[in-house]
Amino acid sequence: MADIRTEITIPARPDEVWRVLFDMEAYSGWNPLVTDVRGAPEQGGTIRIRLKVRTLPALWVPVIVETLRPKAMLCWTFTLPFGILHAEHCFSLSEEPDGTTRFVNTERFTGLLGGVAGTLMNRLFMDDYRGMDRALAARVAAG
Picture 1 (cartoon, helix red, strand yellow):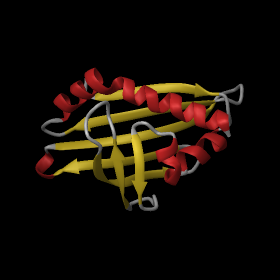
Picture 2: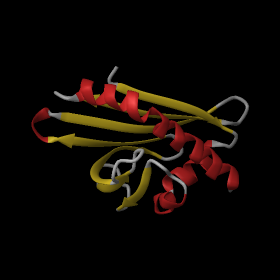
Picture 3: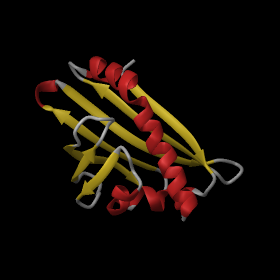
Picture 4: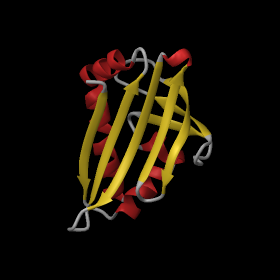
């Protein structure tokens, strides 16, 4: 499996969840996976994210914002040269009939190392993705 997918229901409207998700300057205060962001996210623009998984050293990664649909979806991509690896990370928000938000956190790996990267990420770091989901829900609940 080369994809990661986690999801959580957050007891808040999508605009409330989006407000926290899009406030990237505050990530260091709550996000255990993407602990810092440099740059203003604009569709087609490049930002730098600081990833922290488990006990590994934090890593700064330049990503391109591919999709930016306020209150609905944010996706960025990271690509290594020569088709070695392409990773697309997406956050999707959808309103449920009861007014809660279904938050889906996905990462798709393609390229020569896509299958290996996806398999390793699933085996080693799935809890980190779920931890981010829970931290987002807690931050939204805290207001």
